[in-house]
Image 1 (cartoon, rainbow, N blue to C red):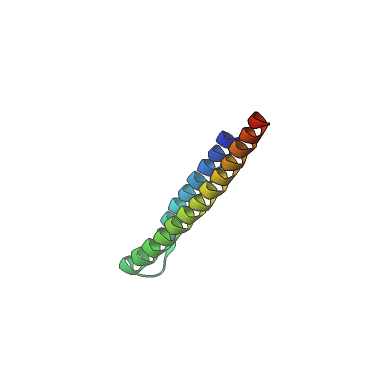
Image 2 (image 1 turned 120 degrees about the horizontal axis):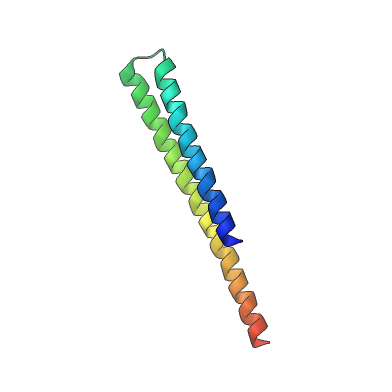
Length: 81
């Protein structure tokens, strides 16, 4: 169950990054602004996306850790009883 969740997270983040890269490429090719200005905007967007993905992964890691702790505590309770 835990491995499946990790696989789903990895797939989501991979898809998110791939979509961001493709979107950045399309934006660069179709942008009406100068190249320098467009690159700056894309860089800011990429940094924001990276930070957002990192925060989401941290949240998921905390959630998974909490669930693992619950399972361990439940197993300990059952073994002692």
